[in-house]
Image (spheres, helix red, strand yellow):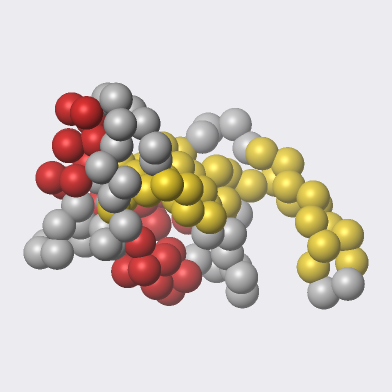
Length: 112
């Protein structure tokens, strides 16, 4: 089913599961996200940082939110994150279960 063009999925990597869980609880508690998936198996990230090729084992989070709350979500992720420049990529959801998309929208609100 078509999404209402308001649902977003943010990808964030963290140094470890503890940090990911802390961020997840913060953003859910503040109604900035409806759901956060934390992948148990670490991902290997290879990237350029300050002129050098680096690699790290990281934990990937998939965060479901709305377009309206995306900026606030990004601010909270940056505030709580240990990295100088945390990954924060947002994807617009074009299709999905209408019931699930409505649930995301209902659970992401301005009030806490």
